[in-house]
Image (cartoon, rainbow, N blue to C red):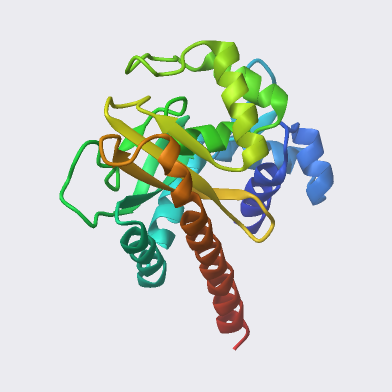
Length: 255
């Protein structure tokens, strides 16, 4: 089991697909052992071959599991309190979203007013190309991976302002990458605008996104910018709670 977990961790840490030989060499595993363990992990969906190759990437089941774990972590009392506080400060619904299987999945939300327009609730999902969380996720991919994903996505036009033209979407993603946060202008549901900021690990890797959705009749697309600073402060607090939880676990393990 330790060796299987080591393989999963090694593949997940890579920025590209890796071969059985590379995995075995990096983990000092005999090649037959590496083949056997990787085969078992592939059967369970924890690893899978990159499209058109014999090299491995994380599997869909592992992605789904990791999103569920992130969701459970964010629903702890301390982190939910941060979400509730920023929702109260902003006065609008705030939600935490992660990306799994190329869709945005919402793992926690707080509503502070009567439902109006689009409401993202835990367990619901939305497309990448017309949500702020999806834009942040795609903008942080390496350029080649970003291009490949955008060409592979089915860019459904949900409203008149949904971005479905490839080059226009790539421009928005580059702007998002440089700015560090994203917003949407009635692109998924007419009459609803939103914005989001990344929640980063101590290693500056994307864990999830913290966003707000609001009726455009109450807050204009341009006015969304005023939400960014409180969202960023809350995202930093959420990142700190993750680091604190890791420290607590380490302390418990050493006691």
